[in-house]
Amino acid sequence: MKSGIRYILLAIWAAKVIQASDSQRFLQKFEGAVRPHSINVDGSRLEKRSSTPAFEILQEEWSVEAPKAGSKKIGQLKSATEACRKDVHKIYSAADLARIRHQCKEVIGTVHIVDFTDSIIDLGTMEKIQGNLIIENLPQIVKIQASRLNEISGTLKLDSLTSLTDLHFPSLQHFEAIDWKVVPTLTAFNLAPNITSAKRIIISDSSLVNIGGLQNIEELEVLNINNNRYMENVDSKVKRIFEQLSISANSRELRVNLPELKWANNITIRDASSTSFPQLQYVNHSLEFIENYFESLPLPVLKSVGGTLGLLENPHLEQVDFSNVTNIQGGLMIANNSRIQSINFLPQLREIGGAIQFFGTFQEISLPLLKLVRGSALIKSTSNVLDCSKWTTPVSGNSIIRGGQIICNSGRVQSSARVSEDGTLLGREQKESANISDNERNSGSFIVDKSKLPAFGFALALGWIAALICFLISQ
Image (tube, rainbow, N blue to C red):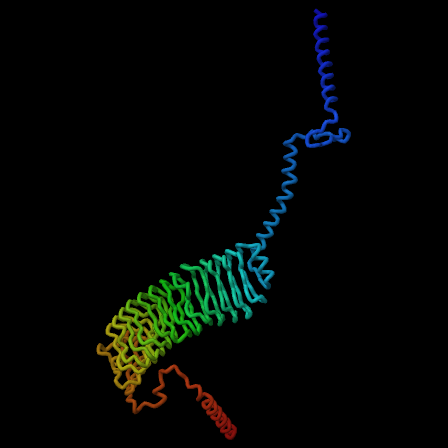
């Protein structure tokens, strides 16, 4: 049994010897042959292969090497983000503008361009400004362009750009406000079509002839167009104005057309050749038409004015239609409209919350439904036909005036009366024009003749000197 085991072990050993001999001959046969990719291996220079597991090597690379490259990229991104995010980005030069334009498609904060020496401002590929864009006090700027700018979350403010002729913002669809002042050579601007939302539009001292692409905005806080000497049309589809509509000192040919306006807080129209408010129903505070050139003023559906209603110094005005106004919560002022012969255009008016002031050449006042005036009444006309007794000697015995005083001057008589809070007449006085002195004619007027103030002061001083001399003599 032992001898059998011995023979088996000898056989295994012999097989290994033969295998080793064959391997040696195989290597000797190919010794000197060219190895793959012509790589010569110098065994004496081979280093020991790392015994570190492959996963640990990869893990080490991921945790050490990769973050080094990534940290650089993250740092660059963070730097760019910080450059685009400030309370105010001050731009003083073309280099400053190029830097922010290159780094930021979206800028967070106000962009303020001032002391800029180039003649053209180009915002390049900038798409959004979360803040205001302010460009001011740059007399050499002739053009401002921003071909991709779509949104300004605040105000686009231009001020004192006295050479600016071209404003090119063809993609600008969204902004909170436009505030353009002292841009006297600006003749046109280009914004995105169909702008429907904004809060404030202020355009002052420009050479624009109309308000262009801003006419489709339906709600505004402020619409203020003033001192634009070539402005011929203000057309807007605005329906509500929450703070102020003010149009003044533009071209004498200016036509104001707001066909869809229904509600406004305050309205002041000056120096216009025509106005159209066919759907205006409510004015929350004052409504004033001053020094205009139109001949007619139709507001057929106007119902209420929350403050003062004023028609002042409109020399060509003849026809007025306030036929549905029932309530004026402030005063009613109609003054120096030389072609208005009869104040009869408020047939439904029932109450006036303030005072009445009528000045002019009118011959008649007809307010058939008026029952209460909470202020005083001051009425002056050069017409001899005007009947003041309607105001100072009411048929019912009680006056509709509750503000303390009534003064009514015509070309023929001066009448006055005092009234209590319940309308009871406390006293009346009437004088014929022949018996009225110049001082009495001017009573109730708010105009002071300043040319006579120096003479009055001299006379007063002379009186005091004479009194002082008399006192010294008596002593």
